[in-house]
Image (cartoon, rainbow, N blue to C red):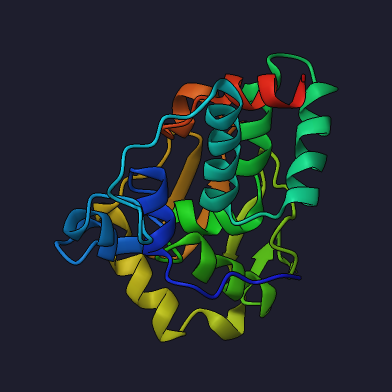
Length: 208
């Protein structure tokens, strides 16, 4: 799988807004977009006027960067969303939110989605008592997510859990940080996801 190895702050600067790719650092004055509020590169400070297609493409790229998925996988999510009941754009975001790595991050066990993906891949989390090492695993209502028994004392998980209450928790999730356990209450509704994303532009892009 391809891995982005450049500075993550460049992604936020290119989109012109915070994507919170580096966890708590994004809330400090060390945040790249706070220090340089213009796009990266030699011509970053020049004015950019995007076409309709350009706006649609940038919105898709933004969502891919937020959740850390590649083009083929993202396209598969979109086709799944199209065949679900409801609005395709909202369905797309719901599918991405249900990814196990995203849920681990949302619950506060990881400082960002990249770290959550690494923790899941290395087998540090279980779903309903069974080890799952697939970051793209889609959780469902009633699922219990918790660190594996051998990972509950891991310093990175303990540190993140101790700071989780300051980050807020989506209403479709429930956590018990004393026992390092979380539960999926229901499918996430669009208003519970709370991302600065215009998903309709993505639908329009794939409808061309």
